[in-house]
Length: 255
Image (tube, rainbow, N blue to C red; front, side):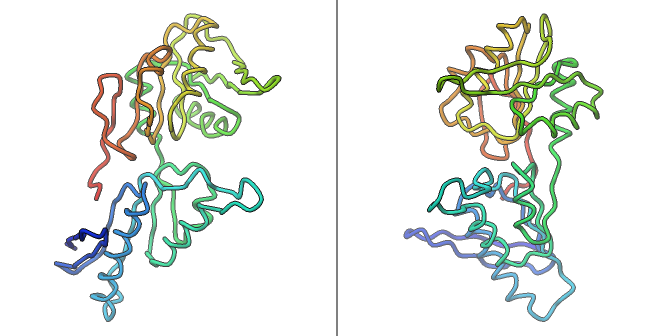
């Protein structure tokens, strides 16, 4: 199926179906504009396929906007992921694939959804570095990192961040002396937490520290991260990065 998208000067997005058939959209999905693009295409497709129930509609979202807002954090605040997922559900796709969601809450809130694993990208990174120790950055990431470590037959060292008298203190719960370490997580916004974790690992003797995140935002650049991290690996699910400090895995056919 082929379609075209137009954006008017006032910001309006409009879609036109050029060739009928199954609908298969792959999109970053990291902005509200992305969601409106999807909705415009789906509405036009629905109109064209009103009498044809044999065609299927599939949506793949590589970096779901709002995925970390997976609860109502404080009284009186909006539950942002719930709002976003309702919008997606209103499009009535037959199948929605979510690439490495921050939590299973996204899958619970989106109808007909299925997780797409990031494992193959972690495996590529693991092999490129040469069998490093895997580091889970916090308690929330431990379960997923433990599953990856089992598949790779890799050593795993948990870490955790606690606050003492208001100051963050990182604890490393294992021996990393003279070892290469790979921190594995789903998303980096600014990345300062990873900087401090890498600093803690090196203070305990780690020879090198690498970082893998699936969704690399890095909104404040890389200068601070270069102080403690040796190299970063990520996909281009959020954006394309052209920097020698980053190895980026390209995802296919992003709209």
